[in-house]
Image 1 (cartoon, rainbow, N blue to C red):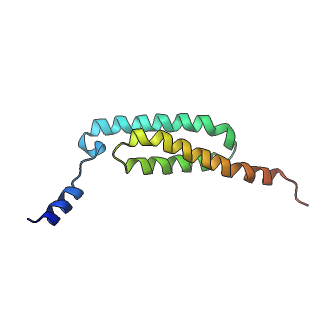
Image 2 (cartoon, helix red, strand yellow):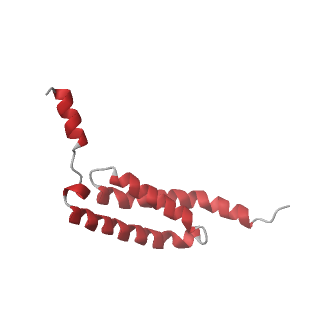
Length: 102
């Protein structure tokens, strides 16, 4: 077996936290869900009726964090940044909806 085949094999079978120990993966998933709920509660007032935007941003942050070696360390900051970015985008949208049309 040459070095290229060994590299391909190790890349395919790289263990992750979730598949290395299913119980640890479940606990990690539960902690990320708790963090997601806390961030959701923090930003819920900003989004009022359009909470779906916030949920989508948090889901995207979760998906991105699971692609790293340390999802629980990455998720809180990434989720907060995404929630803040959506809040900044949502504020002008909300004010345009409240402005009476001419």
